Structure formats: structure tokens, C-alpha cells
Image (cartoon, rainbow, N blue to C red; front, side, top):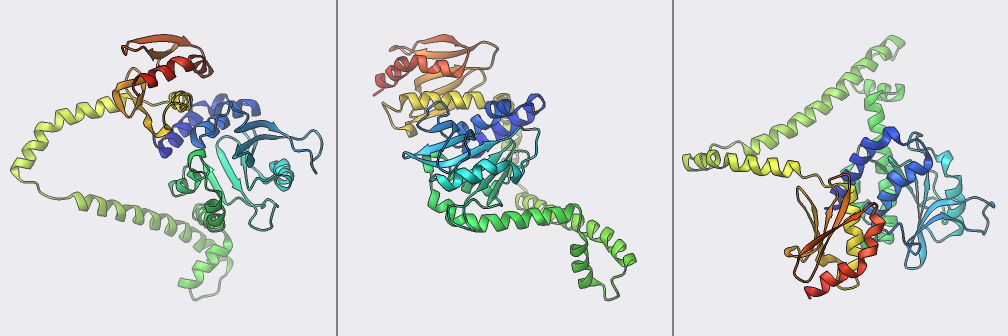
Length: 362
């Protein structure tokens, strides 16, 4: 599953479960830990990568802790502070982040409630966390233009220098977009006055202000609709052609097959839990092969982990589409044995069997 798909899967989980998440600990377990694991790619069960309840004594009030510190190459790179998902994210919640940012090597700080993630760095003053984020990720409304920058924070392609160099532009573009969006939703008087002056030559009286407040609201909404419709017209126009009889016949005859393929694809739902299980299996067998050779392939009844994307080289199968979960292990004859598990952590108990499967294909 690609980076964007994993993010979409987490967003779907947030939408499904937000109604039952009421505490900070529940938010961490249900939303934030999967974000660290599935999106950023760090092992939340490895204290050499993810340190929960991180404490730094120098210059920090006693007893205060940051919820998570992400470590790479032996250095703290990212600090994460969490709040309950039912609370909006506010800079007032970041007091620990401000203090810890100054006494660690971290250049990235994240403030989150599991749904909105605010990313901070030190653009305004060295070793001092900015008051405004340079990137805001909202899982309820994902801005796909931010994904390439977000991916640079993931373990496999961690590129701090690139992130920092782009942070300034990201910060102001993000703020401008959010400001424009706010004006489109509910235009402020200064915005109304600015636009009114471009089209109206009379005095800007109270009556004119009230009139143009309504007109500006209507105009901005119509402008957005026009832009969307224009793009749709272009997209449809590019496909508007008249096929010859042979092509038309082929389309008609292949329609049932295509519909069947689509129906089968729709029936497959890759879950975040399957992705997390896959990452655990891949981490285990990386002692034998490069991670890029271990791939996943989802099916209706199971989630397969394969070597070299070859279904003749199965490493494991995750049977998670039922109440009782199983991991399918393969012997030398490629015969599958299903072993019940109650949690993802139990996959580690089968490390030797998983590695043996990989070795048999080498």
C-alpha cells in the first residue's frame, strides 16, 4: 500500500472510532501510535526508535514529560505531544514541546489530538520552537499537496535538511491557504472592503458594507464552482470521442468482465491492522533480505506477505477479517498452518518460522 493509501486508511479509522475515544491515552493508542508506525514507519515497540514518556532533565521542570520522542541514528529527531481527540489543537497545549525543543537535538515537534497534526520547527530563532506550525495535517480533510513533504519525515526516506529548507515556504503557503479558506467561508470586513474598492466607486458606507458582504460571499462561492466545473468540462472533453464499430463492440463485450473485476476489487478492504501486521513481518525478515523484496498483496479472505511479489514465495498470510485473528505460516512444502493470535505483538513469537520461510526461497 502506498503512502497516500496508508494515510487514507488511518483517516478512515479515525472517522470510525472518534465517537468512542474520550481520553488522551485512548487517543495515543488508537490514533497516534498507528500514525507513528504506519505513516512515519517507526517501530513503536522499539525503545531505540520510539521513546514514550520522554524526559530530558536539563532546563526542564521536574515531572514534565513529552509523550513520544522519535530517535534516528541515535539522536532525538522528532518530539510529539498528544491531547485528547475531542479537544481542538491549540498552541497553549505545547508548553512541554517549547521547553524540550531547546534542550534536545530535535528540529521537528508535533502537536496532535490524533486527528490534526501540527508540525513545528525553528525558523524564527535557532533552537527555539516557532509559535506557528509550518505544516498542518488534518486527517478529516487531507491536503494531498503536503504528502511529499510529510513523507520526508518517514523512517525510510528521512530527510531533515530538505524538510527544514522547505518549511518556510510551506509555513506561509499553508497560512495563506487557511486565510483564504476562512475568507471564503465568512469574509471579514477588511476583505470585503478590499474587493468592494475594486468594483464600486462610491463611498464605503454601512449600507454598502452590508450589501457587499453578501455579494462577496456569493461571488467567491460561484467562483469556486466555476473553477470546479471548468476542470470537469476539460476532463470530460478529453475523453469525448466517437469510437469505431470494432472498438464499440469490444467495449460492450468486455463490460461484464470489467464489472466483475470492479466488484471483486470493491470487496477487498485493506485495514490499518493488516498494514501494521505486514510491517511487523517485514521488520522480522529483514535480517534475511532487503525490505524492498518483501511486499504485500491483499485478497478477499486474507492479506498475503510475499517475497519478490511472487505468490509462489509466500512468507505469511494474515487472516484478520474475522473475530479470531490468525497468522498463516508456511513450511518447506509451502503448506500453510494457521496459528491463532490475539494481538499483533504475538507475531514476534513466530520470528524463527517467518525467517525460515524466507531462507527456503534463497
